[in-house]
Length: 592
Image 1 (cartoon, rainbow, N blue to C red):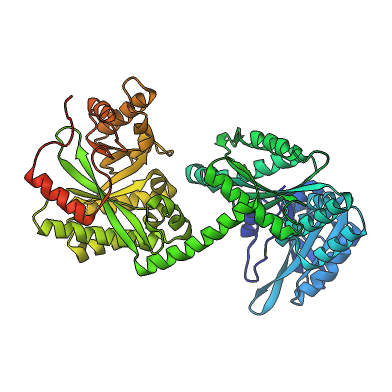
Image 2: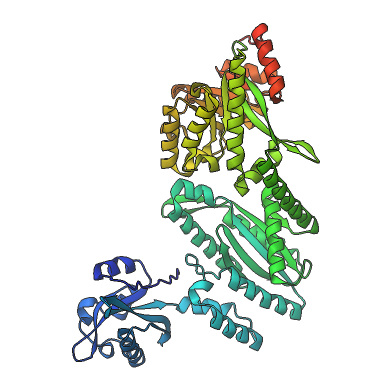
């Protein structure tokens, strides 16, 4: 059940707007007015509970609370309605039979006077039951629960979409579970579970589908653990579990594997088939500590390792803490490097697979680390993405590469197309197109010779913005290519929305490319479909003549990889351009 806490506006409202706001809520909302004789009467009733109580607006119109509600609820409403008409707010938990209602009254002002009172009752029965289920038997648990109820409002303790405890409440409950495990000399597993596929689902199907997925996951977790675990929605993509283990501690691995298997299946949400991809991080009491915050932090560290390695499941150990500390140091050093521009652009040529000419080059970047020397992009680009440093770094790479291209042209060289990678974060910046245009004007770079490489995820993150940006860039004469095509969810049908000039086949399809192989069939299909849409194709990661020959057979226009040249600094690239002008010999076999 979804629990929602809404603040009643203090300004003018209307019956129509009230109906719209309450049509989807699991609650009761009503309007009260005071008659000239001082009696308080109802003028409107909306919400699911109104139907369950068996009355409508027409049935209660101009009736008093005692004519509608049980005596104790009616007495409270009348008493506090008078206070509300005097300008005071009021709220209370009321029990009707087996139901518990959180009821509040708020005045509505107009021209300095209270003209009506808005009342609301939210059914919190299920939430109270959950609170009871997770309460540890004993006075210590009850005392803590009373303290928690005094400190926390209901809406700040439970997640809106899943009804599960939020992080702060989970941490308190975890502390009690640790004490109980200590008393029983048992093991407690603290688990952080992340829904890795949630971003993709939000991008493809919208946030409503993502919210449905979260609710499904919560249901699966509660059904699987059967009340033995404390379950929490920690926020975002993450759930937390505190799972007591009796007997062999190895049972935790088997139990979580069963949960992961359940969550790894595609589930149906509103006729949408959604694929759940999860990662687990686990810490154990007493092995890893006896403090709730510490165990939760360790489980997060283990989760990060599980996602980095692709294993999907990791226990915490001390090496992970050292790795996390190293990451913090690297973030600090990377931030400083971006501020001081301690980077160097490298260039890797792209060759025609049919005549051996240089078609252009891709700009890559190296980090000039003061202690470690040159660091390749594989070690820091993802970190730059996660921290947002990719935006200023990417802008610097684009500006520097455009200046270098212009310098080569002034020397009479022919560098061809300059391909620059653009991250998803860069591409989604509101002023991205303006920045690109400014850099072109500043450097004198020919827009017709600039190619921006974007990933499939960048094109899909915000479709409307992506379409607008790509069209605006195309209007400037800039070519757009899709980098690492085949690794995401972008289809050829989707590509037709964009004025894309080129596809770059991801290197994993080229790595094992041989005649009559499965990869050949995939590559052939990509090339054929791209050509039908008027796009050219460049293959990344070409390392052998056999790969080049297969690509050539299927009429792939260009190749890039170690078969031709490794990425090189600007001075070496300049030498290659000069050599290419003086010597037109093809650097590899182009026979078909």
